[in-house]
Length: 280
Image (tube, rainbow, N blue to C red; front, side):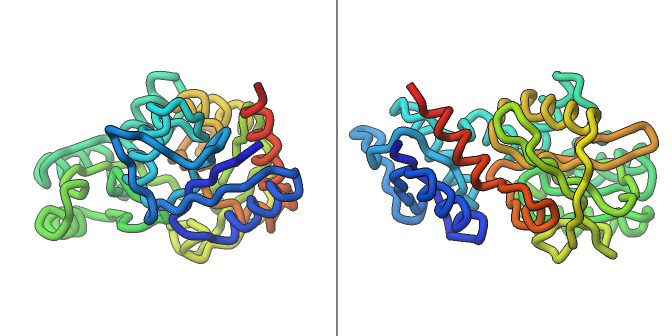
């Protein structure tokens, strides 16, 4: 099998996938997005059986996956799943359509309507850009004064994406939130992500510890993955008084913290799945 890996840069996760692929006897082709030229009229691409997307730049990954779909080259994840997961609003809609329990969410288009939505949601509320990762540009809105100030700043200083206000209910994290890692039709591992700060991304310094996979966790993680059409995903969950809820879903998810906390061999599971996926 000749496996292509779409990359922006090589992190620890990618190094672990490289090692697992080589151990499995795969022929590895590293494809850096900054070097790509996609010729629409005369399409060509390195000869591979399947491409694993580990790109960090959403737009580059999305365009490349769409290009590969046109060429008939299978990708994990698909263009459709990646477009959905890269946009929190589209993810929320898919989860709602599939009946998967998620945090309450509202969308607004102006600071005035966003302020009304936040007050309807109730303080505190969380304001997020609809596109983004690593917990960047999130704001926990504790009162009206904070809401007015942050909404004004986002309207004047933000890009187009920050003029669309994605508002989510705030749920105190009991010891942290949960990163559940889905590969194919299996939930292979889960870990708590904990921090003194309310944002618990490992990229922001959160610590990790093992999370026991319960039937409830397995069901909601797999149903969430199915809802967005994804194959290899990090599903972020939070515990509430009414059970687990989905926060968001990530393609190209980081798994260093989960591996350290649980000992689950995520790279080996990914490579084994890709071999099955590419089999004729």
